Image (cartoon, rainbow, N blue to C red):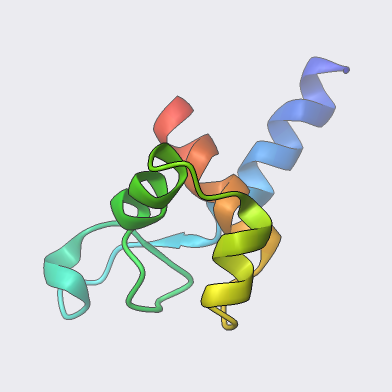
Length: 74
């Protein structure tokens, strides 16, 4: 994949990560929701699939999970 396109995709995904001192003590969260990035990563590391997470947390979107992974990878 072209590096420029990859960087644009990652930038778009990372815009889903928010920091608000009034939400989850300022931890990086998904779209201002009370889902810290670390929580989603814990679910993935415990073996849950993206589909399972989305089924359990219906206000999340697939891109939210990808954003959490991109956030850690940066």
